[in-house]
Length: 155
Length: 155
Image 1 (cartoon, one colour):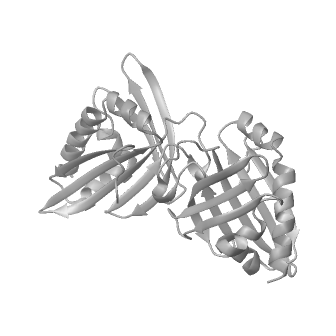
Image 2 (cartoon, chains in turn cyan, brown):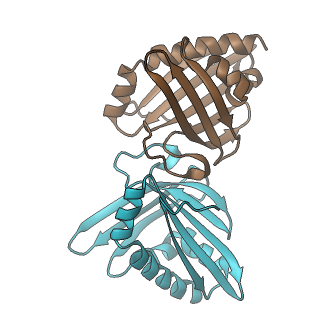
Image 3 (cartoon, rainbow over the protein chains, first blue to last red):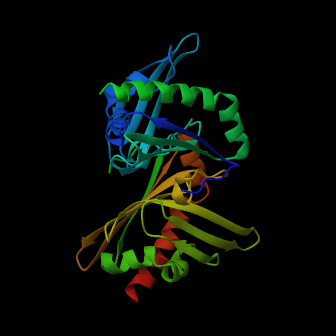
């Protein structure tokens, strides 16, 4: 996977759990809800239909900001290795009207007894990448990755 | 495939050639270039990497309007039956900065010795559907389908 530094953001972490457990945390709604958004944001009503064209949807309750639902579309599934989804399309590849506009690529590789975890967000334009960075991509996705580490390690 | 009349446009035609030949016309660049845009628009430099995540790109020379290149992304490939691609993403599912914004779903079914041909364009919003309709969706895609009919029948 070749990154474009102009439009892409990447988070890389070592997680303690093996890829099989990290994969479960990304693909089972009840587990995803436990770590997907940095607390105190609450993630609920996760819907995951794990096939290309299937839904990837979450609803987040964000204190003092309200509720935000995103219906994305899964694009690629390589069990325990690679999950690609986008918010530009919804289930059945139907274009979404008010998308923020990114594709997420989650890459898992065994690293020791744990996982080398890479979470990549690809954007439409350099400005949009910067706006995602300014919104707190590294802190937000970093905090979520720490929560993911805990949930996966407890499985 | 369930249409949403608010955001989708559909063209349905009977084509004389069998699905295998219509499929070739959609997936082989040298054939696609012969019918893809209504003449006198010229389609050239077609690039098709026939797998999910692969490129679907064309360049069109439009008289008195100039040149237009679109790098889309193939989403679903069911040989001789279904081809789905979008201009919202480019190769590798990378979001596109200046997309018109639609997903095309091409459905082929045997009908007699020919093909029942359905070409569906799904849009982000009802306004965008209307704008595509006003740009001449039915005439443009209809003329292209007649050209496709001729190219496929001659194979």
